[in-house]
Length: 419
Image (cartoon, rainbow, N blue to C red):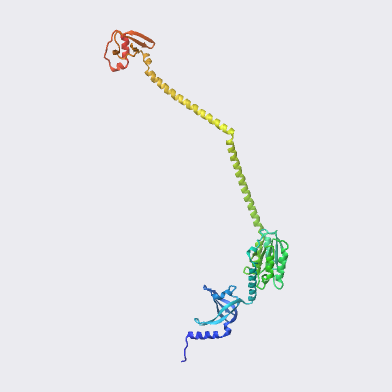
């Protein structure tokens, strides 16, 4: 048996063979991208294939600075790099350092070069962008007269606002002299004093759209005083004209939507504003009328005639209340007086005299309340209801009686009888 080699030794040997081949250290490989994966580390793993075979490839994160587009499935590219062996898996692969699009690579490089140049000059700056008028009356269009783009713009413009005037400059949008034709159309429409200009065409390859990547068109757009909407190709197509224009539309149809105001929607909005304004004016009028009525009432209540009337009524009410109070007090006092009179009459000696009793007064002019207060031969005065009797005491006779008889005034009768 001959000498046996390890797998690692074989892989190292083959790797050294690749390293020793100067052609494989810097080689351009053309193919279609397949199995493309962007790793989280930043590396790109993909496969280049053609009709007869395929080649594994990798572009490390450090080399991606030169990649100006995103690598995607199905792209035809040319990759520059070196072919070497990956020892762990025992397979060879292309370590790419540069990748350009096949067939479009030169155009794309021109595109990027002009883009950087114009961006450095400030043609893409936002401060140079002009606002698109909201209610245009005249709109210019720079495009081919027979393409689908002009038909889409016309149809959408008529649907949105049939009163907008469209002015077409039929320009070449593809082939030799197309860039000059588009630039001339922009300058011609700019001199007409239009509200907006739409510049564009339908979709196509990068070669078909190249007129809108030319410097002459970019500078014509930048120097135009009329606001410009670019509408080149489909939504995924991007041209230099899109960066310089005041507004980019993804398609010509979208450009018409952006440039032409919706007349029916605007009319409905105006009617809504009219109704809202009328409602608010009516509310204002109602509010002011209510305020006027309130001020009128306040003025009426504050007027001298009303105040005099109110004060007069107040005085009448107070007078009536005072009169009622006086009458009530008089009534109360009169009733109280009657009670006092009745009580006084009950206590008055005259009331006793009217019942047949008499008042006996001694010589000292004091009422005689007991026989012990008089003496024999003493002169007394007996007062009756209708006059006085002067008498002299002949005899004083003491008699025992009950308390009830004394309280009934028996003394008065006894004195009278003795007299």
